[in-house]
Length: 161
Image 1 (cartoon, rainbow, N blue to C red):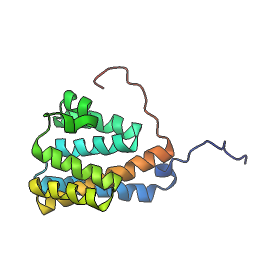
Image 2 (image 1 turned 120 degrees about the vertical axis):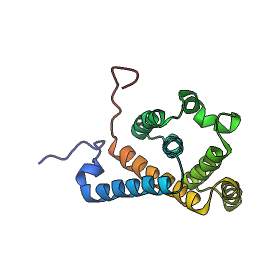
Image 3 (image 1 turned 135 degrees about the vertical axis):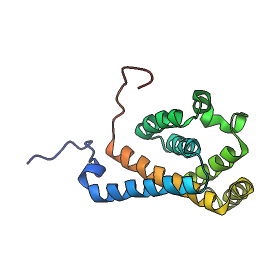
Image 4 (image 1 turned 180 degrees about the horizontal axis):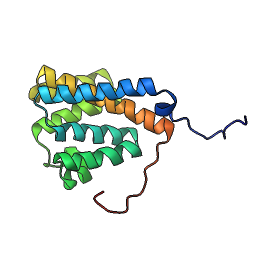
């Protein structure tokens, strides 16, 4: 059997389906924990989109931008999400969650992390802090699976499909 091209990617979700199913199970558990903690689906989708932006995952951005719109996030919020700190389009709770999600994703120096965590604690309960960290961690794992597998983003024929 010939060797695959050097730039060919392994679809790790297909090659090793059990870990991928487990990751999907984590995502479902996080969704349930978010609901139990009183966090709207729209907030979790904002976290998913923002973490996917930071990680540069086109596939997850495609999936979760649509999910965010379905969950009630406005198109304007999605459009300005990379610059969310420079707008008034997000509630204090959403800002706290975004700070915590970004910090979880980038793992900055301890002083920056402490400031972000302190801001998050002003608006989020312990349970909510935990859920946001789990949500950012989980989508980050999906980002890595999709990027390393080079999951394609297919053009849609209709704008809202």
